[in-house]
Length: 159
Image (tube, rainbow, N blue to C red):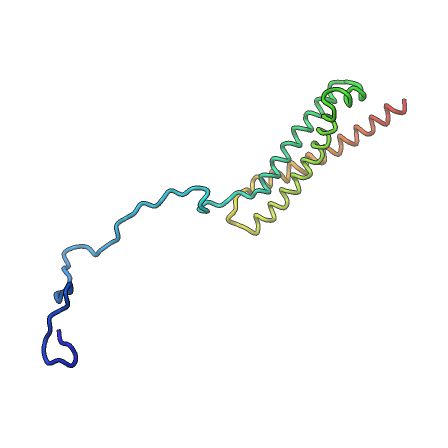
């Protein structure tokens, strides 16, 4: 090896070889390191839309409350006993939950579906669709049942 400005070959610096690399072994590859296990908390998995889950929980709570209201009304107890029996305020709470739960769940499901269309990596589409469908159905049933209860109370009060 010649250095510019000198008139002859020089010794290579320490650690450098002037011979070509041997060709009898495969090229160098980095050792394979195991990939760390992914957890749901490190952002490796898409998160489930929280509004979809909330909507589904609200719809299910409203459905259970409506079933309890209908079961209580199906006992044939007079209206005064239906409103007075049990824990104070339990029946009005169940009626409110039976009406408001599915309505709020359906609205949460609709908003979640809109969010999921804008965020394709998120999960929860099935929960959002279920909350929307069951929510609107249970809201309609709740409104019909409430209308029937009002008609029955007016009919009983007039006699």
